[in-house]
Amino acid sequence: LFSKDDGGVSGRLSWGRMNMDATDIADVTGATYTYLVNGMAPADNWTGLFNRGERVRLRFINAAAATFFDVRIPGLPMTVVQADGQNVQPVTVDELRIAVAETYDVIVQPTEDRAYTMFAEAMDRSGYARGTLAPRPGMTGPIPELRDRPLRTMADMGMDHGDMAGMEGMEGMDHAAMGHGKMATEEPAPEPEQQPMGHEGHQMGTPMAQAGGLAPPGSVPEDRPHGDDTHGPGNVAVPMNTRSRLHEPGVGLGEDGRRVLLYTDLRALEPTHDRRPPAREVELHLTGNMERYMWSFDGNEYSRAPEPIKLTLGERVRLTLVNDTMMEHPIHLHGMWMELENGAGGEIPRKHTVLVKPAERLSVLVTPDVPGPWAFHCHILYHMDVGMFRVVEVVRGAVAEEHAHG
Image (cartoon, rainbow, N blue to C red):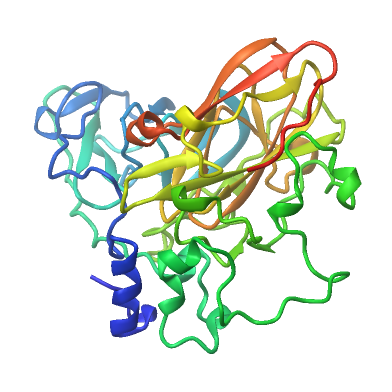
C-alpha cells in the first residue's frame, strides 16, 4: 500500500505519523457509498437516447458530498465547451476529473449504432457511477474494469526527496516536528535578498506592492518554500515547498495515454471583462490535522476564525490558496466569480469552484460586485462541517481595517 518511491520502512513510518497511508485518497469510499447518475444506481442503467451522427451536449454536475469522479465515455471523445456554466474555448479530451460542485459541459458525436457507457470512476477507484448513451431504450454498453488504486507519494505532498537530503528516510514528516517551525536538518536559507517570500510576508488585505509588487494578472503562481508560520495544532505535515500543479492531471491519471483535461487547457471563450491588475493579494492556507480530523483555513476552524475577510465593492483582488494538507480540496466562493490564473492571459476562465491539489499554490482574481456576506468554503461536506469555512464580506467604500494573516 505504499509507493516504491517513498523510502521503504521509513516512508511507512512517515505515513503512520500522519495517521494515514498512501492509498488514503477519499474520506468516505465506495464501501459506504452507492454512486448514482440522476438518482439511479449503476445496475439501474440511466439511459440518454441519441440519433446516430447527431451532436449531443452532456452536462456533468458533481452533486456528491465528498467524491471526486474521473469521467470518460469509452469510444467517444468529449469536447469540453463549458466549465462551471461559463463558456470556454473547445478542448477535446478522453477523460476529465470533476471535483465536488464543479460542472463541465461536453459535446459528443456518436457515429455508431450502439450503446456507449458513461463511466464516472471514483478518484480512489472504490466504485463508480454509470449511465448509458444509446440509440434505443434497453441497450447497455460494456462497463470498464476499475483501475488500480492510485498511490500518493511524498513528492505529491511537497516533500521531494531532493529537498530532504541529509534526512534519515523521511523522519522529517513527523507531524509533531512539522507543527513547530522549520525542520532541524533543512538546508540553510538563501541570503535575504534572494529568498523567495513565504506566506509569512503576506498580510491579509495589505497591498502586495508594499512587498515587492504583484505578478501580472493571469500569471501562474511561482513555486515557493512554505514559510515559517505552520498555523499551530490545527495544521500538520506542512509541505516544504508549494507550487503550481495546474498542469498536472491529478493522482491516478495521465499514465495510460488518455488525453486528460488540465486546468491549463481552460481558456475563456470571450476575453476577461476586468483587465485591471489586482490591487492587493489575500493569501489563505488550507489546513488540516488528520489525526484529530480538523479542517480549517489558516489553522482556525470556523468557530475560532477571526472576523470576516473583507473585500471592497468593485476592487480587483487576488486570492491565493495554499494547500498545506495531504488531500484535494474543492474551494467554492459564493456571490462572485473566481477567475483562475492559469497562464491564459486575457482569457483566464471564470469558475465558482476550484480544485486545489496537495502542496499546491493556486491563485484566482475576483471583482466583488454584490455587497454583503458570502460563504467561502471547501465543498467536501465533512471538511466544511468541521470548520473549513469562512465568510467573505463585501463592503462599500475602502476596507476600514487590515486583517493580519494567520
